Image 1 (cartoon, rainbow, N blue to C red):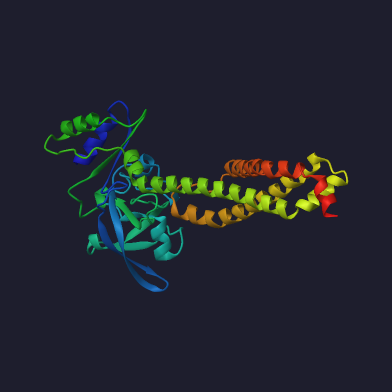
Image 2 (tube, rainbow, N blue to C red; image 1 turned 180 degrees about the vertical axis):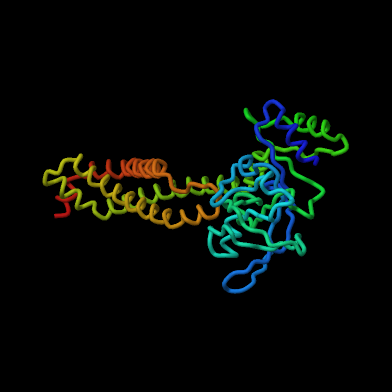
Length: 328
C-alpha cells in the first residue's frame, strides 16, 4: 500500500523520527462522521461520532495520552483479525458512563454488516477544534480494517531534532508514487497558535482590564483613607497632643490600608479558587492555579496598597495638636 511504503521511506529519511497516518489532523475542519451503535444497560444507544483510520503510532506522534488498554497495532490488527477500535475518553463517558470500557463492543455505520468492534484502548480527551472546543467523540480504527478508506490521508511526521522540512516529505512521496500529490504541508504548532488567536486577544483585554481595576482599587484605597483621616482629624490631633509620635500615627494609617488590601486579596483568592475549575475544564492542558504566581500577585498588591497609603499616612503624622486645643 502507498501509505505503508511512504511511512517506511520517510522513516529512513534523516531527521524523521516517526510517521503515522490518519483521516484528519487536529485543527482540521473536515472530519469523517459516522453513526455508532452500542448496547448498554439502559438499552441500545446510537450517536454520531468522528471516525478516523489509523496507521502507525498516532499517540506518539501527536503526544496523546493512552488512559486504558493499548493502541492499534498495524501487525496485530490486520485485515484478517477481529475488528477492534480505540475510543476517546469523551466518547466512553457519554456512551458507557465510564473511562474503563475495555472489552465493550460497538458497531459503526461505515462497517455495514461486519462484526462488532471490540474496544481495546481509551485515549485522553482530544480537541480537534482548538483549546476551547468540546472534547471530540472520536473512534480510531486500524487502517487495514477500514472498509471505506477516504481518498485523502493526513501524514503526521515527528522530527528527531525539530519538524521535518516540507521538501523531505514531498521528495519521499514522489519517490514512492509521483502520481500522488502532497499538499497543504503545515506545522501543527502553527495551527495551534492560529486557533488561539481569539483567546490571546481576550487575554490581552483581560490584562488591560485587570491593570485598570488595580489602579482604580488603589485610587479607591487612597480616597477611603483620606476620608477616614478627614473624619478622624480631631482624633489624630488629640493623640498628637497627648504625646503620640508622628511615626506611630503614620503606622496606624498604613496598617489600616494594609488590612483593606489583605481583605481584598483574600476575597479575590476565594473568587479565583471558585472559577479555577471552570478554566481547567475549558482549556486543554491549562494550569489555572500556580502557587508561586499567586503568592507573587498577592505580595505585589499588598506592596502597592501600602505605597498608596503613604500620602494619607504623612498627613496623619503632620496632625496639628493645636486643632484639639482650639476645639476645647
